[in-house]
Image (tube, rainbow, N blue to C red; front, side):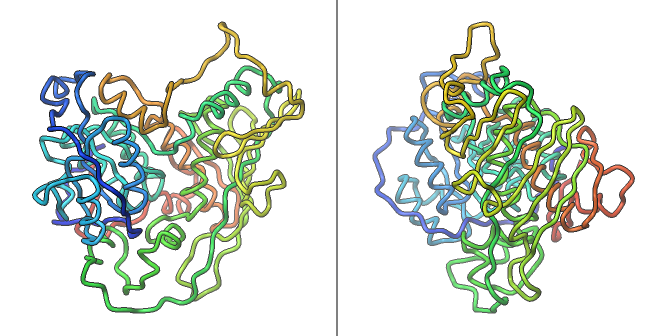
Length: 439
């Protein structure tokens, strides 16, 4: 599927301010000028990036992309304070700063687009970038809901563009080693996995305030429901816990990190659970935020694997986020970032033999480094679209089961619930006109 209609004239940016010293960059020679349009880029040339979203996360990614030789050549945001700061930070001329993301992603001098906005904008911008022929790095999670993730996945499949989902873990050498240990049977057959990430939060009642002059709040809202302005709606501390912008809160927005690792270790990138049931505690009625505070969800896969997903307060393994693999010959616990422990410390020091399964090795650097390298080489990245979609879906599925308070049966190949019309209405959500996803 692809997006045929993105008709509004400007777009949002993240709210967190970004500041820092700018560095000098050489004259732009985009890789597209030397063959990328034909599906091949010259490895010796600088990769040029257009950044949509210039808040804290967008600038974090762009800092790393620049560190690996990319050049930021265009920026987009409807937060004019962030846009101005980022323009100075990356020495982007005023003529390449814009509030209209369609103009930004279409710039001929840009080889690729980094989507570093709020979750409810990820897919619309990514689809526009694909339509413009750009490679895309999309921050996690890919989409506000399961349907958006599927739309983007199908669009990427039909394109010849490079895609990275910004889950970060697959470029961490220690995480890759843990996943290889699990894949190669060091703890026997895995029978259960327990995953955890930080829980939700409350914010108190909605408060109405004047919209500041430096923010186009209507465009910040975009396809989400129109609401009165409250400064907390644009705060990175809160917008992840608002269903308007991220339909399951941290269950997907942070949970995708740990579920991406679990799926990679178990070779589940192209599938998902077949049964889901769970319970959750939500903020009190009248609170601005409406996503789960705490939860416990049980998933069953077609191969019999069981996975339990809890908020960090319920996880007995420390640090509040990670993955606990339980096998017939032992266990391994790994944390987001790569640290690990095992039932026998010798397991962690085990070498992966030449004839065993070796997972994608990005070499030096992180997933931003890998993205730049793959834009040049035209090889798949470490975080492909199918993995990004299936890992995000886990959180969305869990929250739907908690909301409906009953066991649900899921078809991961079709991305739909079996014989449950009510549950299927929650796989997607309406977009505020005139924004839409079209086949």
